[in-house]
Image 1 (cartoon, rainbow, N blue to C red):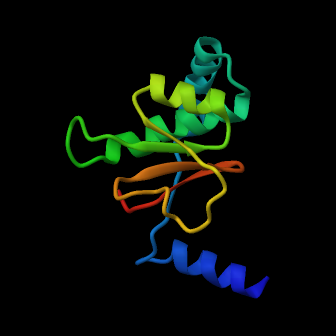
Image 2: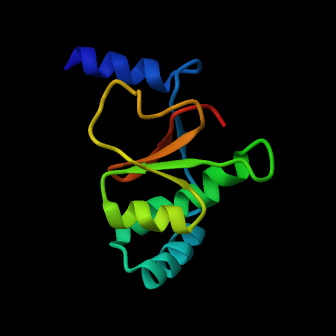
Length: 118
């Protein structure tokens, strides 16, 4: 357990590869409802996509830059692609090799993480 906590602390550190994201609750809820109605997703899947749109996309450096979205769920991945994300179907690989070099937003429980500082 301590090793896992140490790895998480390093990943979330200032020089780590993971950046936690958040967005205003009201805006996320409104956008998530739209995504649920448009893509017939479960609520939490839609919350992840709404947060990615509101918090990560505006941080991209250049207009037109792509942002990957990694998730376990096929329907969520399809909705991510329809919303303009590069969809990455996460297979449980913990090596990070599926991340590539572009920033990736990953749905993780009740929140989102990016694989690279944006």
